[in-house]
Length: 216
Ligand code: CTP
Figure 1 (cartoon, rainbow, N blue to C red):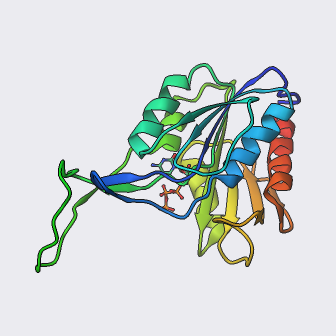
Figure 2 (tube, helix red, strand yellow; figure 1 turned 180 degrees about the vertical axis):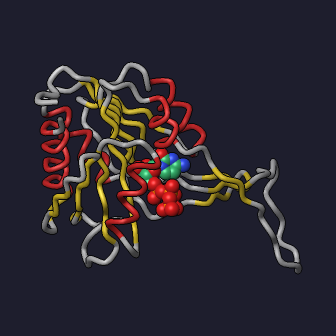
């Protein structure tokens, strides 16, 4: 894809919040910074960008169409509704893998006994897109691994039928959740592996966009 100018790009970003009751949720530490930086960089490159964003305080510019969602299910519904019309789909959101099976309609009152919350899996957005992907579409996933990083990222790429996977390392000080910097390794379907230095998320976004443009 040598030029993404005029192409439609969908980006997911941020965490998801999975409700337990009207006042509580299960969430994670994702800030949304990485995904929003990718959305902004794609817009700068002339793409028509839709950002599907979980709860995040990070603002995005008017050049990006932003759809705010809360839960994995809402993110799934928003993304799948736009699946067919997008050329490039970049899934950088830290989607919760599990959600409470039952959401209490009233605030859960404290009792003396232990509280057990049963969890069920959320729909896997990346895998669902991979299953429906057309040959003209480019699917980019993210992986956060703590061990056997390359091997796990490679098998995730194959399992979820991605073209490119961006591997975040949790081993690096200054990289990942909440930080303004990140260090990534980018793998593709043709077994190309590119490693990058720790840099600002805006610079990482440029590297990811370059990989998308260079992908054949
Ligand atoms: N993802 C998604 N929908 C989910 C969970 C994850 O779209 N319900 C996407 C993320 O946006 C990211 C990639 O899948 O692009 C990350 O996958 P991850 O959650 O790390 O992989 P898992 O399938 O959970 O595998 P594992 O728990 O073995 O790491």
